[in-house]
Image 1: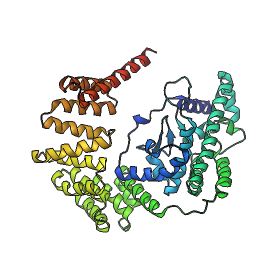
Image 2: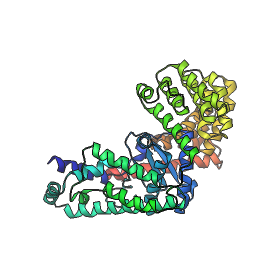
Image 3: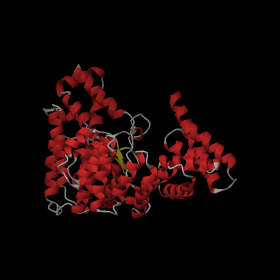
Image 4: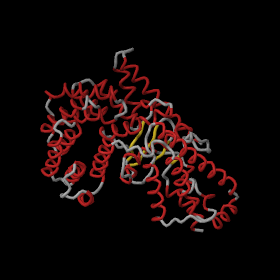
Length: 451
């Protein structure tokens, strides 16, 4: 009965609509640039425009990646932590692009929205298989659902196999070796063993994914025959990946864990990066700044090292001291919107009205280049309000609220902005658009509650 219960839990999870955006997004300029560069050659092989495909990082420690409809791939922070190379992550991205191109996330299973089609939902697939052929089958037969479940699971297995094949094709076309893909599947297999799953005869019927060992065998044959098999992974990309992985670890892990993984004897750039965040989280300002300065000694104009130093000073309550680093970071990054937003925040945090005009200009440029940044809109609203422009402050609030899913507040803010803005102006039209979007979403929510 316990195995049957576990199986039912798995099926409920698989049939539930995706709530990707309910998870915390991790926005970081350096990480997003890396993911964009890693995925661009793969996406180009799909026939899609890389500019229209997003690779989104989620703050989730589980080793997972998935698609949820549209042209977006979601990667959990746990997957980055588990991967040893950029090439391994490229293998995951290639597989998930197979789901995107195949339209696998758009399933009509009686639930509104997309179904989570996941390459690495290891515990879901393994738990279903671990339910065991005989006992689980008996339980399902008693529920009268064996045939329906079999079709559903077989369909998912078919999708996974299709995405495996497509991913191999995309990597080959991009001239990227599949060694990383194989290595990552082996990691998954080791995780299965650690969680106590051992494949048994008949288990494949109850799994959402093909058996990992079978996938490794099939893909090994495909990749080893490919001309790109012995092509070395891009050395600069791998160096960037090690930086980002360490940065992410230092930002998310407990400081004691960071100091264990990246001890003081390690003077590499990734280690300095990780320890800078760990010391900052541990409120050791001087030591955090020392690590940031060690990075800047190696590359004084690196925008991400400058951003780090500015962030440490700003969050330590020293916004005026952060300005030089953040201005340089913004300049050397080509006005990257996330970095520019941090500069705008620091300018406002000085509480010096002499900085407000610069803050407004910086933030307006940032939201023009990246409209989907709620924090930038919030900061822009603050500066509009400080300058007495309440109509645009309300419009900025509406932008921030609609991006945060607070539709009722967004509707009220948009209506207030529309009433105060010059009729027919671009901002007035934008307020109307937000109001219509918020009304439509509120109406859909009411319909869902009625059903």
